Length: 236
Ligand SMILES: [Zn+2]
Image: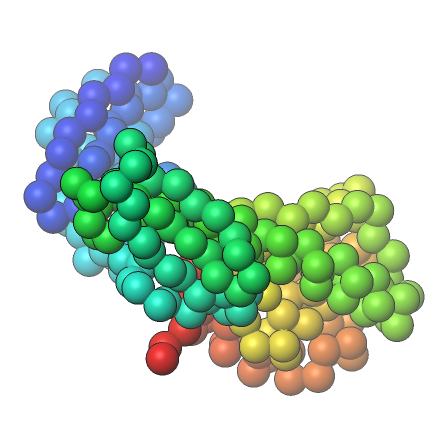
């Protein structure tokens, strides 16, 4: 496989790979939102770039938005961001103090500097992860018992596209961003994955089971499309 990396104004980094196994041009996004295009071995790289350009609108809608963390920003874990300038620092640092996430940064930087924002991002992910680890294991346990749908293992991961998954061995993965959702959507995702312990695919029997354990499943399925698995910052 041969790969070339391009930078396009409209959609950012695009990697175009020539694959002997490719018969047509396909496009996907990395978790960071970078565009990956596979083209047949005989096609010119430009063909991959043209294809990416033709999908620019779709790509824009799928790429994660740039987040800017602001002073006093509230996070759904209950924390609030507090940026403080500190003359004796060489690089940004973060710490938790009560319900505050304190991001300290050197005099020469400002809040919107990528290194400062990255520290804030790391701290927020840590806060959301620990909130998820507090809430999700007991919630899945109680729903699993209530509906007699045992699972073998729970992992909490940071995923960018899906809220959860369940494999054939009944190992369930839940997204650490889940606890930011309204409770009924959180329960919907857990019930959805638990239903997969009986029905791996999304066929009629799957939906029949899910409707039994999660009333309004169809409506919640539409509702959750309004959210993306990412940091959701609270207003005010
Ligand atoms: Zn599913």
